[in-house]
Each structure stands twice: as C-alpha cells, then as structure tokens.
Length: 390
Ligand SMILES: CC(C)C[C@H](NC(=O)C[C@H](N)C(=O)O)C(=O)O
Ligand SMILES: [Zn+2]
Ligand SMILES: [Zn+2]
Image (cartoon, rainbow, N blue to C red; front, side, top):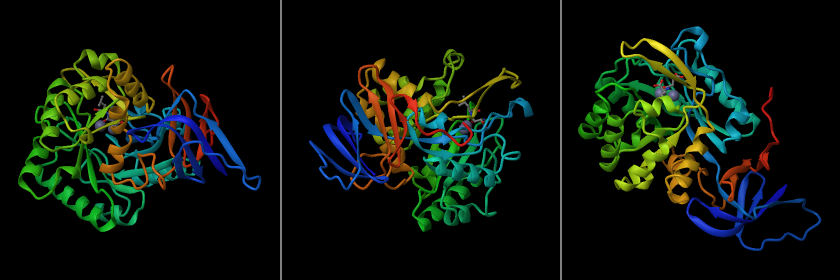
C-alpha cells in the first residue's frame, strides 16, 4: 500500500515548508511537492494534510509499559499500559523500563510486553534493570543483555539520591557505566544508563564524579526527573551547559508544581534562555509509573499514575503558553532521543526513515492522526487500531 500525505506543513523537525510525503510500506520514500500517482495497478491512499502540521512520531524514552508503583504496598502497583495509552499521545516509539519494584515485575515480562506492543504496531525497546543495583537482567549479565537481546539498548532506571534507591556507590555506577558502554560499542547500541534522580541533596554528585574522573563520556548517561525540584533543576542547567544530557519528566500534577517541581514546558523555556544546547535535552513521560508522595518523615501519603499523553500536553504548553518555536520543542521528543539512544531510522522525517508521524491540527493544536511504521493508528482523532484487549 502506498500513502501520500499531501500539503502538510512539515517539520523534520526543522521546518521544511508545505510538502507531500510518500509512504511505501513502513518507510518514508519521498518528500516533495505536487506528488501524484497515476497508476491503476497500485492502490494509493491520500491523506489530506491541509491545515495540519506533520511531525515525526514522538519517542518516549521512559515508560513503565508493564506498570510500576507499589510504594504504598501491593494495592498500589500501577496497571500495565495499553496500545492506545501510547498512540493517542502521538508516541510511536517507547523505551520500556522497571522502577521501584524490580522484584514482582521482571525483565522477561518486560521483554514480553515490549514484544506485544511491537506486534500491535509501534516500535519498542527496553532498559535492563530497575531502581536497584545489583541489576535485574534477562541473561544474568548486563553486558550480555545489551549484546544479545535486540530490544535492550541500555540500563535503567537506576535510582540515585533517593530514599528508595539501593544507595549505590560511585564505584558501582562507574562499573555499570563501563559495562553498558563497552556492550553498546560491541553491539552498535547506545548502552546508556537512564538514571532516576530522587529528591536527595546529593543530586548528581556521583554522575559528575564519573564524567570528571574517568574516560566515560557524558553521552553514556541520561539523568531523568531533572525538573522534580528547583535545586535539582538548577543543577541540571549547569550540568547540561558543561556537556551533560538531561531529561525532564512530563507526567505530573498541580500538587507537585506547588511543591516546587519545574513544569516541563517552563523547564524547556528556561534552559533555552540559559543557553543550554538544544540537542542536550529530552522529555519523557514516566507513563504508567507511579508519582508517589511522601511526607517529611518519608511516609507514603498517596500516589498518582504517569500518563504518556502528558508528553504532548507539555509540547502544546511549550508552544502555546511559553511561545517556544515548535521546531526547537519537537527536537526534545524526536531527533534528540533518537540520536542519544542511537535509534536507527527514528526521530526524523527523512527518506529511508521509518514512517512514524503525528499530524497536528494547526488551528486547535491537537493531535489529529498518528501513523506508526506506515499504519494509521489514529485517524481524525478516532482510534483506528486498538490494542488486542481494548
Ligand atoms: C518524578 C516523580 C514525580 C515520579 C517518580 N516515578 C518513578 O520513578 C517511577 C515509580 N517509582 C515506579 O516505579 O513506578 C518517582 O517515584 O520519584
Ligand atoms: Zn524514576
Ligand atoms: Zn520511571
């Protein structure tokens, strides 16, 4: 089947102008103007892009696809994700991970869930591990996981500066980064460590120690939740300006903003104003992860569940409220994660790349159509492809 998306305003994520984009199978085959196919032998579907903005499908680099949570006991284990939890947010590629609970949830289940979502139509990868060191793996060895399991691209989310962490030493994180880096080099993968930052005052001291005192480069680490409180966010700006990569979590709640969390759309604006290089920032949802609340005695007082759809909400707020240019905002959820995570053929509208797209209604700035690997998942705001049990 050939599809032509006609006359859309295309951001690849740089703005290209009004273009037609031709999809053959699951790939982008042409980008240009006034494409027509006069050939009865081939069935062509025309998708009208008039009045719409065409952008690369979003990459959500931190999703608890198996569910997460548990910080309030068994009843607070959050639910597994469904396909449309992801696609209706314009996300076409997810990186799945475990979190606080790497015991009742395991790596084999995470891999099975990632494979299930891939069968349902989107692109998935996973991180080995959970909050805790020693790392929970598939093969029994972190480096072997990255080298032999196609979907494993690194390790995460490993908790530091958090009362729920395993209190890892700098040596443990350093050795882990050495293992993931060399396994990544041997397998052509990123081999990154996705680091969960808690509210602890030690912040990213371990990380700064490693990048300053070893040969391991900044690009090996993606510290996430860097907007969770004002002092960590201030550290994030300095760290990124000195060469580091930083990730902001979009799932949130007004309660957290009152407590000082820096809303992602505002975090992006401040970073750009402070001169943080555009390619150093990513945003991710923590979808299906728990957003637990603890009192000053670190007693659990409740939790909410992260949503993948919060990604687009923050993109929308960044453009409409913070008046940031769309092509800068798009990078943090398309070409930046694709480059940092070394996801081939992802994150850009380029010939030969995967046909992952979001068509945004320009007037209302809402998601209209979502295409994953050439398949229309959402059409005119209606779900066209449901998950198996939805
Ligand atoms: C950034 C804050 C608000 C949420 C953050 N979520 C996780 O790390 C995931 C969660 N623990 C799980 O395993 O499902 C947190 O708990 O600190
Ligand atoms: Zn986390
Ligand atoms: Zn998480």
